[in-house]
Length: 220
Image 1 (cartoon, rainbow, N blue to C red):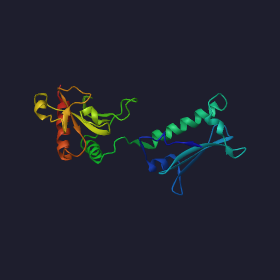
Image 2 (image 1 turned 30 degrees about the vertical axis):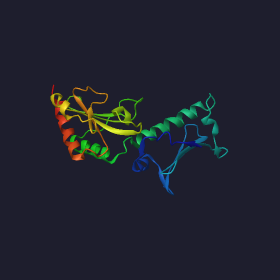
Image 3 (image 1 turned 45 degrees about the vertical axis):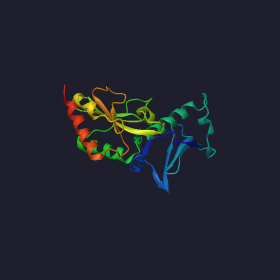
Image 4 (image 1 turned 120 degrees about the horizontal axis):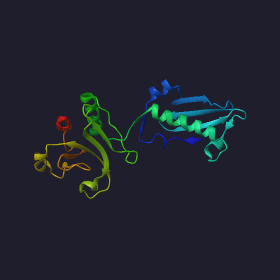
């Protein structure tokens, strides 16, 4: 039996989408069964809040086909079909769930409701970094990142969530306080600011700064 927790890491399972995909409710979770192209095998997937597992069943013996999890040419086509299905379920039935902070989630909701924009995760290597772009000209106007706190000059390596926004160049120097507001992290420090999302800055104030950043992104 394969543990799928890694497959769903940093993802939120959408249970309604599971049902649309063909999963059926079973006890405290959902069950999916599918016969493979080779009629002698079927895939069985069980997903609940507590665990996510899958296996391939040899229909002739009614036992689990363990060879599918062993690399090699034997069972390769079965393994490829199996893994393609798992990846499709992870893509179709989940949403990205990287950012955990209440304030961060309120910001994500605000941007979606105000500008209709979803976060874009552009870097596979940096899966905790995402941006918003202005759809009229494709310029970025915000970025959410997860970084060690010491990257902002604090004596701790605990992970924190930050927001990068555009800000008027001529006002940045007087705006930065190195406690709540910083020069842009991984951005042009003459045109971007970074906000530490730990509720020191009121969420409504951040909304106003997002609006300003959006307007600045419209400029040529």
